[in-house]
Image 1 (cartoon, one colour):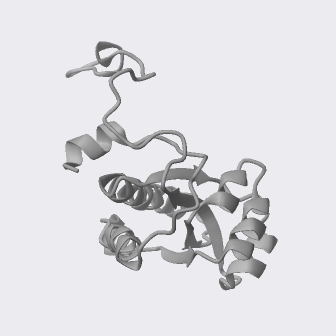
Image 2 (cartoon, rainbow, N blue to C red):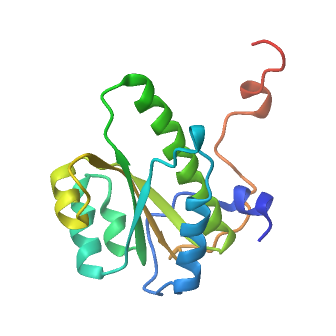
Length: 171
């Protein structure tokens, strides 16, 4: 799929088939995440790939909106340092957002669906994923083959009109 088509086809998927993903697919998605630009090239992230079904089912309990993680073929946990400084936190969140989008676009390029989730229970996430105390699990991104319909560029999108959101020069 071309980049523009991947951007237009990407949507949140919360229902996946049982079809497994190839290691080459997962490595490509993780490589896209690893190559993501970050402020001052800090690369504040680590990525934990989970493909074990019982672990995915347990991981789905870290947030009320993460049930789809249990049925994904794989889920990537984005792990980051904990900062007390508000400026550092803000920069880190921007960087994590960029890494998230890299994962989403790379998956869509492969025809794979993704659904993100927050993480409310950090203690459970730490127990399941084994990350250090000075880190937190920022997000989960479930990945798999969409069960409802394959990814294709969307023709009817639920977005504000272009002219309503794009301002040139001034608001």
